[in-house]
Every structure is written in C-alpha cells, then in structure tokens.
Amino acid sequence: MSQFRNLTYLNNNRIIYRRYSSDVPTSSYNWGWHYDDGTYGYYALFNSKAKINSYKSLKWHLLVLWYLNPILSLDDFKKLAKVVCDKQNGFTTFEVPNKILLSMINDVYMEDLEEPPKNRLRKIVFKDSTFLSTSEKLKIVGTIMGKGKTVKQDDIYEAMMYVHDHNEKITAVKLSKILKCTTRTIHRNIGEELKQEKYLLNKQL
Image 1 (cartoon, rainbow, N blue to C red):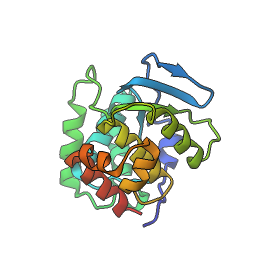
Image 2 (tube, rainbow, N blue to C red; image 1 turned 180 degrees about the vertical axis):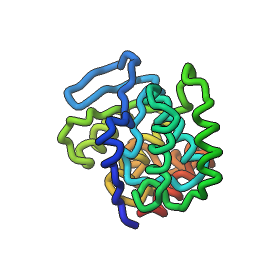
Image 3 (cartoon, rainbow, N blue to C red; image 1 turned 90 degrees about the vertical axis):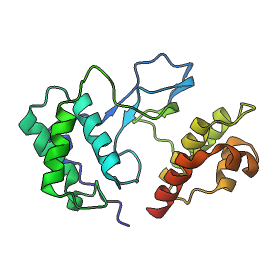
Image 4 (spheres, one colour; image 1 turned 60 degrees about the horizontal axis):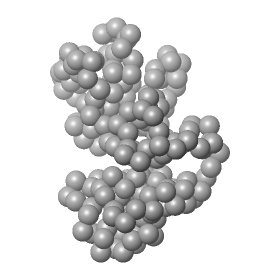
C-alpha cells in the first residue's frame, strides 16, 4: 500500500496537527520526554504510516483537528475536512460520500472544545527535531518500558506503534523483546482492542 500523504494544504494553511503535551514529564531528555504515568495531551496526527480506515477513526481525526485549530471558521473547517477525506490525498483508505461527510462535519463542529478529544495514553514522546532512527527509538522505548515488573496495555501499545513506524510486522516476539518479557505475558495482557489494532496496522504494510 502506498504511504503517500499530501500534507500541502495543511502546511500551507498552517493547520496544527501535532502538539506536545503540557503535562509535566517525569524525565526530560535531549530526544524528548518520559511520563511515568503517561500523558493524554500529546497529539500527533499523521505521524505514523497508518491511514484512517474507519468512520470512527475519521471522526476522531476531524475532532482533533477542530480542537487544535479552534480559530477555523466553519467554511475553513469544511475545506480541511474535504482534503482529509479525499482518498487521493492519502489520508484515508476509503471514499467518503458527501452526505456522510457533511453530517460528520456538522457533528464535529458542534462539539464542546472545552473537553479535549479522547486520546491514547503515551509514556514516551519524541521531539520532532530528533534525528534518531526508528531502531534507536525502539532501543530507548525498550530501555525505559522494560524497567517495570508488569506489562500494561499502554506499554504494549507504545511498543506496537514504534514497530509499525519501522515498517515492520507487529508480532508478540518483537513486542516481548522490546518490553523484556515473555510472549505469554504479551498474549495475556494485550486485550481485544489492541489485538484488533495490531491486525489493522499489520494489514497496512
């Protein structure tokens, strides 16, 4: 599957689609931050090779764009949504009928911006300016996440995303090596939601 994603419209119109967390990190490094309890405040749309593959995911992406760009007018938000929903631009894996798109735009635009969109907990955040390779990032993730005695779903998700960013298939063996645990521990703690996400991410390779 092509990984092309046309960000020209977003960049030319200064659309914010990535934002660091305002939470205080447990540790700060030259490459980024570590949050021992995790942070929900880090938004990084279009950061991985994964494309939007469901209406639920599409609505979440539009909601985050609206949340991060509150000064957009309704017309500007419509233009942005149409760019994201145009399959030719590489954001989605499917065509979005205009009627469904307009309904979704209206629903998102009416959301209360005082409440941040639901977000995945992240424990390690790398700076955009870091020149670390994905392999080097994986080593850092493994060093930090492998310190604990128990493996949680958030830890597994963190490892999954970095394996996927390396354009490799996510397997229990790779996750166990990163988190310094057994494959049995991975299978026991991964959960149905992460199993489905693992399947979808691998399908996109």
